Image 1 (cartoon, rainbow, N blue to C red):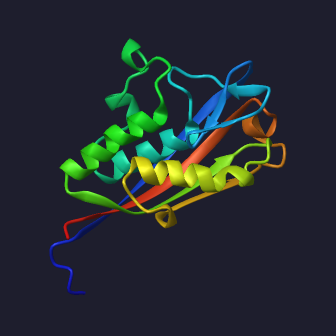
Image 2 (image 1 turned 135 degrees about the horizontal axis):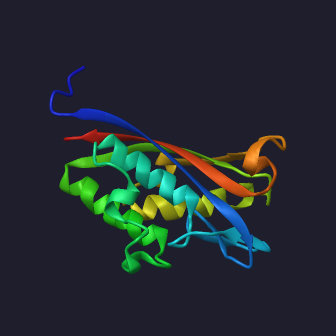
Length: 165
């Protein structure tokens, strides 16, 4: 196809956290007003965690637990977007750039679509990419499973990266 110096890589990411009363709900770096939030060592931003895992996976570099372990007090309460910036630095060091990110949040509520633009902008900014390369969407499980019962939320992400010029 004429792109001899490029390599295309795909990674998949997943994260889930328990919903608890009184915690902040942060998704894609956006704080959403809700009585329940996600419990975790960092800010528990499942969307950004799934994106980080997808990018690290595409580069063959493990997962966020390897790079930012929840046993390390340095990451207690950390902003997931700041951790994504570190993943972005690693991506650039390895000669990769984002081709596109596609992510899905699984939750029964609250309604998330009003926040998709801001979430995508935040993720794109942290990755030094264009917002049109980041797609965010949400779905429910129609009441099935832990997310369907409102016990938690999940996020899935696929990242495609291009290496070279």
